[in-house]
Length: 218
Image (cartoon, rainbow, N blue to C red; front, side, top):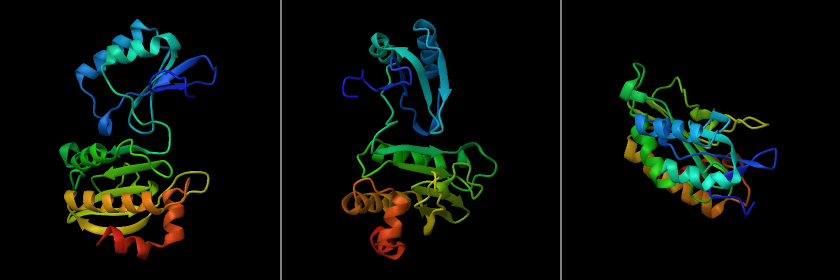
C-alpha cells in the first residue's frame, strides 16, 4: 500500500507491520544484535523471525512505531518485496567452513552491493555457495554460483515455486570478478528483454540457454 510507513509490510491483521532490515549475506555483529534486541524490548515487538533470505524480520509493530524503530536501528530496509533483486544468500565458504572451495562471502558481498534492490521484470534471488554441497541452493535460484577447486560454477533459472525448476549450467571455473561480470551482462540482458512479470526460468526457456550464453559469456 502506498501509505504504508517506510519499509513496512502490512500484516494479516491489517493493523500491524513487519520490517526487514538490510543484512548482507546474513552477517551480524554485536552492535546490530544489540540494537535489534533493544528495539524489540522498547517497542514490545511480539515476533522476531529469521527469514529464508538470511535476514531478521521484526513482526507486529504498531504503525506509529515503525519510523521510531528504524531511527533506533539506524539501518536501511531490505528489498523484501516487489519486482527487484530481492536477496543474495551466502554460506560461510572458505572464510569459515572446512568444506569451502571458494570465497562465497566475498562474491555475495560484491553482488549485493551491485544489484540489491535493482528493479527487475520479476523478483530475482541469488544463492552463492562455497562448495558443491550447495547450502545456499544455487540450483534453485534465479542466479546461483557454487565453488569448486578451480573456481565458481554459475547456474541460472532455478526456482522452488509451485512448479520447481532446477537451474541450468551457464559457466564453470570462474573467478569472483568473472562471476560478477557474467551476472552484470545476464541481468542487463534480462532487464532489457524479459516480458513484464517473466521470472528468470521462463526467460531461459523462451530465449534459450545458448542465446543467453552468447550474451553473458561474451
